[in-house]
Amino acid sequence: MSKVRTLFVIDLVIAAAFLVAGASAVAFLVPFSAIEFATASVEATFLGLGYGVWHTLHLYSGLVMIVGGLIHFVMHWSWMTKVAKSMLPGTKSRKAAKSAAKTAADAA
Image (cartoon, rainbow, N blue to C red; front, side, top):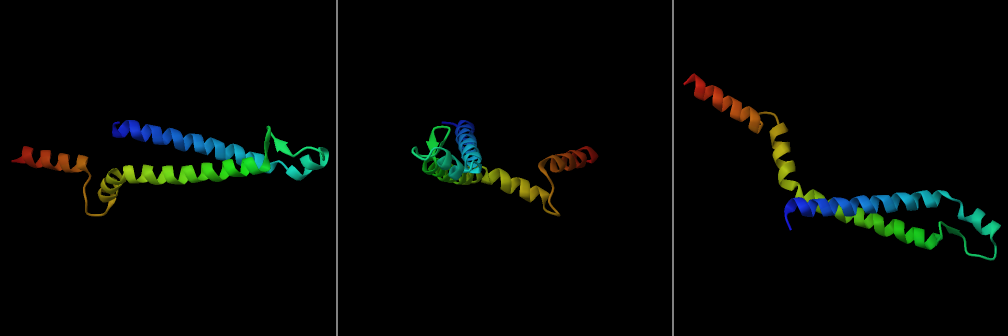
């Protein structure tokens, strides 16, 4: 699998985990105690899932985002170092270096 395709798959996994974590965060805004009071004989659920399931989804989707983010960061490391070096004082970007070299060649 190419690096671009791998990064695309990783980004999709991170996006899916983000959506699950967001949905579970919204589910936590629902007061489960009020649901339990209204339905005393039935376990409190939100969208058909109990509090424990929402908690588990939130936990594992968060972990998937962390691991996916770290993998994404590592796979972009060479690009980040090149950009960081070009932004440091006293260094020229590739475009500026080419332009300077062309100007020097034209002057000679």
